[in-house]
Length: 291
Image 1 (tube, rainbow, N blue to C red):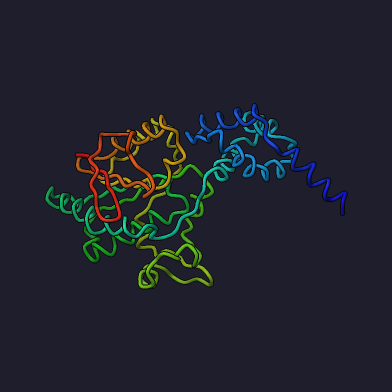
Image 2: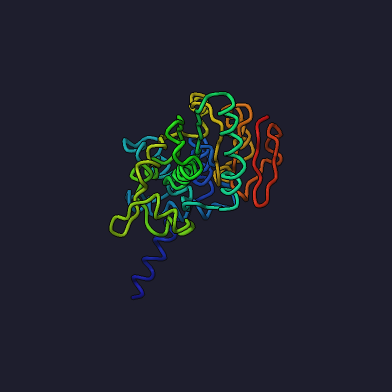
């Protein structure tokens, strides 16, 4: 018993991250993704990457950094790294007050503007879509609002994420009851197909969404995206430092068409990041408009 205990103590010591290793990994992650890990979150990197070291049979974080830089499997491991340093906690119809504002205020304004122009085209960009709950939620809301009129619209929701693994799950469109914990029961009944213990998003909603890999630190990739009337980027910029936040928000501004809207996480703010948008205050939510 005591030898097992001492072995586990030794293992934990081996997996401690040194200051130099932390700086190397932190800077590498920032260069690759724009995700910034502050000095006081060193423990987070240590805890989340410990299993990667064990799985790859590496003795310390220095070896892991070398693996990420030079090993033949570095591309695959980079995807695993992104998975573990970002939190993919999400659900359908997350933050109902904000979605209510989207459904009752933002969407009608954008749809009416398009109708007046005589063009029924709508493009929404979900940046940082995780496993797909957000863009599929938007697709469901569009179907609820437009109903039979949706057939006369050209609608596309572009959903992007850094992690290939979450994109794979999103494309499958299969979810557990836990993912639907904040979804009204009648919505589940109308827009999902029960398959054993899982729920599959119906093709009518699924077909509105196009998934793809994107790195928000790659400004050239962002410039190539189709321009949007609405951008959703919720609970993503919290991972960035101020420089990266300003770059990303600037890219969203450039992507949005005049009169377009940006919606970010309820705990996030553009204060001290950008004054390009006009903040519009609603009960329970702030939306940002490009005038």
